Each structure stands twice: as structure tokens, then as C-alpha cells.
Image (tube, rainbow, N blue to C red; front, side):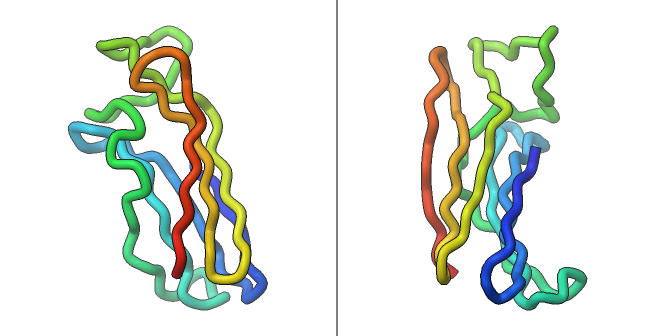
Length: 104
């Protein structure tokens, strides 16, 4: 469930959930040039407690311990040197939308 957007210089900005650690996190990074196979920025943690961890992946048949769940929305937009990221985060019902920005 990643998302991406190109800025006016042709750089790709991406945000994604990573549930490989004990706590799932939301990350952001961007390409440093418009050559998408070139260098990338160091990933930045946007939300250090965004989703369940330990390899968790959302499905209709699995509810993680404590009723944590990850909704299927993540969005990103760019303006100038700013990337605006929106995502849902639900440590408990109901889900809440969070918004943050990262300046590069």
C-alpha cells in the first residue's frame, strides 16, 4: 500500500507502511534526481506507530491483537519542496486520518 507523486522537477516522492519490525511504521523518501534509478533520500519515519508490526498485513479475516487495524488509505501530494502525506491510523476504533508534511 505505497503511494507516490512526482514534483515539478520530476522527482518521485513516496510514502509506505513497513510492518517488518515489532511496530509498524509509515515512511517517506524521494528520488534525488528525475532519474528514478538514481539516488534516493534516506527514509524518514512519518509515523512510528502507524500499524501493527511483526510482518502484519491487512486482510478481512485477521484482526490483530488489541483491535489495531490498518485502513487502506494513504495519499501524498507535492508543492514546491514540501510533500504532504495523509494516512489512516487506528490504534483503536474508530480510525483517524492523520496529515503531516516533510520538507526536503
